[in-house]
Length: 107
Image (cartoon, rainbow, N blue to C red; front, top):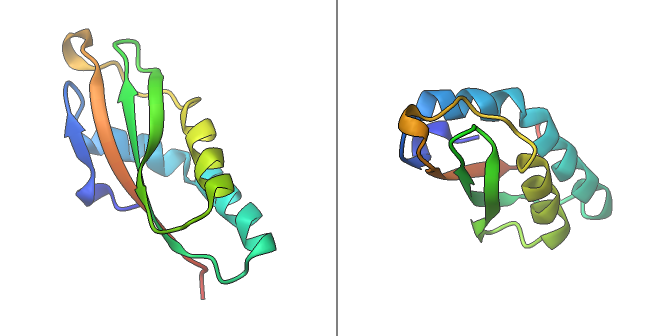
């Protein structure tokens, strides 16, 4: 995850969002590892855009841009992300987030 490159518009700070992303990083890696089974050379950067509603739930999520070229992995990450819970935004406003993930094999 590239938290310092995240774009956050609204009532949550970047660190609060990065903490939730960090806690759920295993779900992103699970999706990536599934894709590696069919293509061991797969790597790239996936930027996901999502909206957090006033209750801290993800009300919309999708791919902003990607160099991964794997719809299966991208769809898996988006599906997982939709279940994440975030802190309540200040003022109960919707928060728009664009967050990049760099996916590459370790080692």
